[in-house]
Image (cartoon, rainbow, N blue to C red):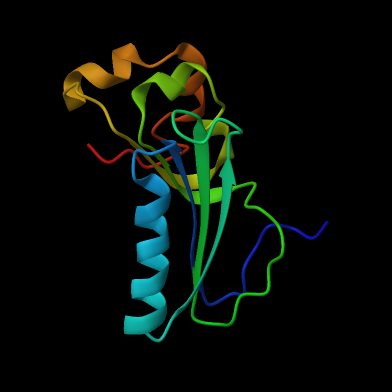
Length: 136
C-alpha cells in the first residue's frame, strides 16, 4: 500500500473520533461540502462506523488539498486528530495516529491546567510537547 501522504501542496489529513449520533460524521460531511463548494481546494472523506451505529465508534477521515485527491485508502497518520468523546481516550489508540508535530484536540470538561494530569501515561508519552502541538 502507498505511503499515506498527499502531494507537496497538500494542506491537511485529519481524523475525527466520535460517537454514533453525536454529530461528528455530519459535521465532517458538512466541512467537505463547504470546502468543496466555497474554496479552490479539494476535499475527500471516508467514514468508518461501528456496527451499532448510534452509540458506537465513528472515525471520519478527511483530506484537504490544493490538488485533486486520488487516495483510495484510510488515513493512518494524521496532521490533526480530534477526539470528541473523552471516554475514548482509554479505549482507542488515537494519539498514536498523529504525525510528528501534529495537533491533538480533546473535547474535555477539564481546564488546560487539569487535563494533562488526567491523561493516561501512554497518551502523555505520545503527546509530549516536543512531539505534537496541544491547543490549550
